[in-house]
Amino acid sequence: MNSLLLIEQSLNGLQLGVQLFLMAAGLTLVFGIMNLINLTHGSLFMIGAFVAAAVLARSGSFVLALVVAVPATALAGALLEAVVLRRFYHRGHLDQVLVTFGLILVINELVRMVWGAVPVPMALPPLLSGAVNVLGVSYPSFRLAILVVGVIVALALYFVVAHTRIGMWVRAGASNRAMASAMGVNVELIFLLVFAAGAALAGLAGIMAGPISAVQVGMGEPILILALVVTVIGGIGSIKGAFIASLLIGVVDTFGRVLLPPALGSMIIFMMMAAILAFRPRGLFPVHG
Image 1: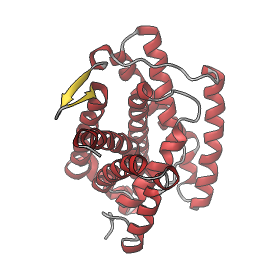
Image 2: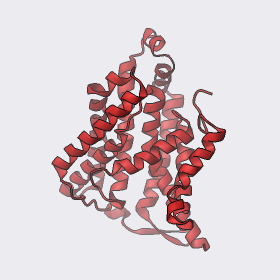
Image 3: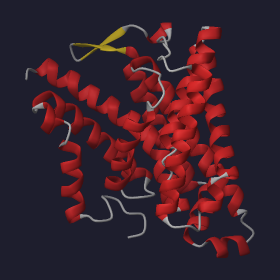
């Protein structure tokens, strides 16, 4: 591998990692704080991409598509939490897996009824359709934009969770729901907002993935599996862990697929997960010790 290919694949790995982080951040928040296994996160990723593609097709504006699709996905997530998933907080994880898996099938069919079974095209924003020179490599501007957006989101999330009153309420509700309620914290509202924020992040990840992959029914399932791996490796509930694990998986997966035989390359991240969990059963950055 020459130096230019090394740089290009490193950037590809970081871009994939940041995209995974946008997906995994909401997943780890919901899992870690609300103790809910939410497999519909991949469906929210898909909804964000479809809404953005529809708005983009009608308006021609990627910014407008972003402005409409992110809140729309947050609203879809809030409705999902309020109507169905709230009733499963005190149920076992098996019940949560079964109900969210059923919801995946329902949402896939609803999306197919609205947009059809054929993949929907989503154009790159004109401003980011070119390439820039990075250390001698001509690299797509849009992929660099994904990197920048992911880093900004990571910093904002860390600040909100660790250094704001809302973050304190969220951590209090997660640690002891009854005590937090007794202290006047509206835990149900906090959990609803956390779920909506996680859905918005999944929608943002879907919008960013739309122009570089097919916007189609079921597009969220493959990345959901990778996001679950990120959540487990990083430590459930840890934003820092999700960010570092996302970058690690993005780089390892990219180089694994380039340097290793296809069968081994597609397994490398799962082998890495098994190796990490053998020594760190609670992940790299467990929230509770």
